Length: 601
Image 1 (cartoon, one colour):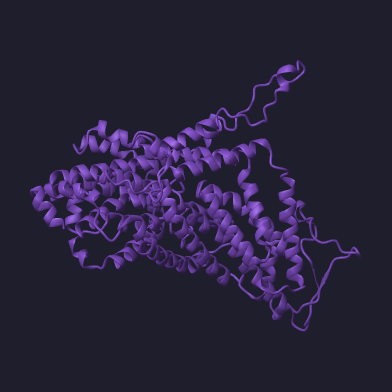
Image 2 (cartoon, rainbow, N blue to C red; image 1 turned 135 degrees about the vertical axis):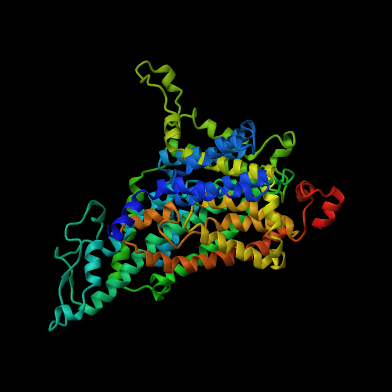
């Protein structure tokens, strides 16, 4: 049988082969390492392989600790199962419920169109507007939902600017050789039969179509420019959504994994909460967003003299049509209604209460309650619970006295069915699997064993280690889920920080943020896949843009950690809250607490 035929058949069953062969491949670990550490490493590597290859659905792999840890004698089930619904999961759930209410009433679309009416219609400003809107929305909505909502808006604007995409591709391929002997050609403006959204083009007084008397080379050059801008629009949205998700704890799953594992490894560390994370990560997001905008606008033709000077030419006419389209779409939304106003109020209240609960740099409102009792999860659940009974229509006292008024039940801002359909329960299971894995690594001593083998890395200067960690995880997450990536590596990075006597946050925060910086491949993130599925981008477009975005992200994280990060989290000193874990860790090596502390310091 031909080798190519065999390879195709093997590929058809490659997931089943992975499920059968990988457990056998890793069996020697059970005998080569100390008993408990070897069993735990076996499960961790098994889950890592299944996550990276997606041989099983991610959520199914995340449930493996429930059956493997108890049966292998690593952790009893009564200690594994509670990890699947910690308070971190409730914070994540409250953010998802709030996002579903925003989507239910279309508030996200109103925000997007309003921002685009403000920034202007020149390509560079529109790219900036798209990135600002996408990043802001992805702070609260999922990155995937943000991208799915913004791409149709971008396509409508692009069609108004440049016409039909397929015709534009044909124009890009036009060369002077195709029309040899004809230095000028006459082309009619497109589309000739405008769609509903494209009927905003400027009326011409003579009622005729505008003729195009440019040379073929001019047409080809202009069309190539328009294609570059089109790609810039499509590529900036998923990138901005990934960047924006890092600014809030609920914006992306790796941020919540960090919180959960900090509470597991360092119970006395209370430095990271919604407010303190936002104060650190939001300026970082703005910095990276600005650098990313400069790069994307430069690469895709948006940065030119038109930003500073107004010209009256074909591009100006197209920009006028795009502006009319945006304004018309916003006008069609009508005035803000009672439901949108209510959702806006609860959304702002949600953000403000989370931010001010305990922001660390000022006294928060949590001081009015018993210390340690009210967390971000409590705040989030209280606010989103109100959405299920607050009316979506303005209450009227006259209804009580009008016998002719309709007696239909009032509709709340959010129904449980809508919330249930909108919440990605698989991600919640994925978070739980990560917390269960972290608990097992800690309890079995695997984290200690790994940390002991990382001692040679103590020779690397901490600032260089930050860049290396961020770069490694940003590259690794190009091929694997960002949640799975941070679950696998965060315990190792925590142990590395302990063994080199560096503040654990100095390594763990860059690792967490770096997992969201996956820009080079369509398969890296769902937003990348959605943009690529439009059919207008090629892999080389994403690689060329994404590799520089990764570099800019690594440099931005390094700058943030070594400037305001140091000041906010006191990263230059080894914290007291990390000492107890060191004692327990080194006690596993049969050292007394005094010798353990001395050995660490």
